[in-house]
Length: 230
Ligand SMILES: [Fe+2]
Image (cartoon, rainbow, N blue to C red; front, side):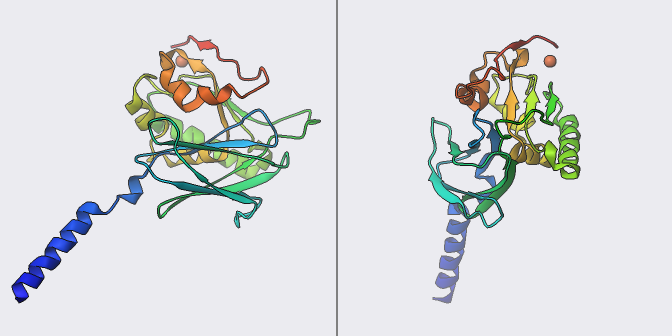
């Protein structure tokens, strides 16, 4: 009898090990930001490895007390997005996304007042192929806005985000690789606006992760142009 009980416990433990979800891997592309062309809104996007409901909370402090909603996936690849509304321009906001037991946090500044005449921002490009080189650049961006918070505004990219823009693995392993923590933090704290480079190839995946959202941008700031450098 004792042997049977021990055997049953072993089976139970083994079953739990097999059935338990791997929470650490539920986030495929950690939260990133896109400026929706309105200084009272900010779009937050993320992608999961499987179907799950996410909660996003936001506010002007880390109590995230202004609002919260559940986000449901769109498309066929476990993508999520929510555009936070009713922001006060030129104001720092904090957000928190919870998926199962995992929590992801970020912050951003809403875009400047309508009467602003100057803006500090970052501009660069060709982040493709070598995320180990992109990561320290992202670290410098973070250090820059930590030293001068007026730089926590926006990133303009000239494109070539990944080597082969038609390769999902390049998006996973170059631009959104979670092991590059500075890139991840940069994406969670600065809206990322990019045109399409020649390395984005057909642009189908660029559109999947970025371009579809730019359709909402009313200004001519973010024109999709072909980046033709190497
Ligand atoms: Fe290039």
